[in-house]
Image 1 (spheres, rainbow, N blue to C red):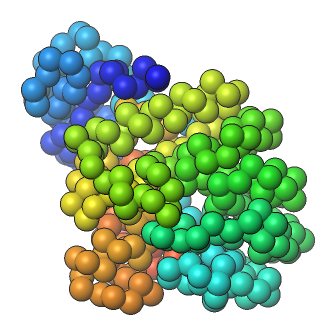
Image 2: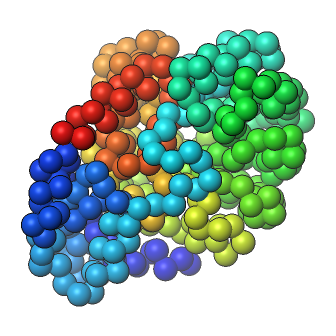
Amino acid sequence: MSHFSNQLLLEPLALLHGRAARQAVALGVARWLAGGPWAYALARLIGPGQDDTILPVTALPPAWDEAARRISAPAPDAGLPPGQQVMGIINVTPDSFSDGGQHDRVETALARIKALHAAGCEVVDIGGESTRPGAPAVSVEAEWERIGPVIRAVRACSALDGLSLSIDTRHAAVMDRALVAGATLINDVSALAHDPAARAVVARHGCPVMLMHMRGTPETMRAHTAYGDVAVDVVRELGQRVDEAVAAGIARDRIMVDPGIGFAKTLEGNLTLLARLPLLANLGCRVVLGTSRKRMIGELAHEPDAAARDPGTIAASLPGMVFADVVLRVHNATAMIQAMRVQQGLDRQ
């Protein structure tokens, strides 16, 4: 069992940004969150014997010094371009919930990736297996037949030199083939828990990896939505996955974490996670946030068509920008990049 099951955590509260954050930090009444540009003036103490205690950062007990240092330190870039990034989604599947069948030919997938890159997307995520709720598993061979030709086409295209190519897969054999073919990083919704060989593959390649929080599998996750405190439980369970990855030989500074919005969470659980994202700073890893077109947005906005949920996706993604190096994983990268640049302007004021 990981030490994260009982580790002391701090939840940053009373967040400040822009000029107010800089002034408060200079006065000593606030601390930077993950290196800034956001800061926090209050913190909730989470650990044995604590009952929702909230204190000013100037009055934190010495026992929480390590946690305070951890959540104030900038996260490693994990081998991706630094700063806030928008990761474009390309599903080369016939059955993904939003864009299934749209990019299942190499030509259409490559054209879409070129358009994303031209719009300012430096990271693209390719998926060959739908992980929507209730989705059936596909074989390794079927998954590779979908994504392998796309990876090769991207790496043969000089216009896409420098593009970071993420592969969304749970299968070690697919990971290995993809990395040999030129993929940059692995995005595993099971946090390397689905395939016993996955951690060894990632460790051997030394590549960046995204560990997402999920309970159960895409087929069963709806039965695993009961939490004590969903935000704290997700951080602790992700922390265990990070420690397991490190124990398997994966460098901690190559690991990113994703709270898994929509995976084994209710609507209220998803909203709680988004409202309390700063808790993820306790993990000391770069944060990936994927809310794009998910059921939660449809429920809140009364929009049954997943492809019509891009405005809601932007609203649900912006909370992630409390982190200076967040990776926002979305289908409509062009719209998200525009929104991100506006938020960045506000954060400088």
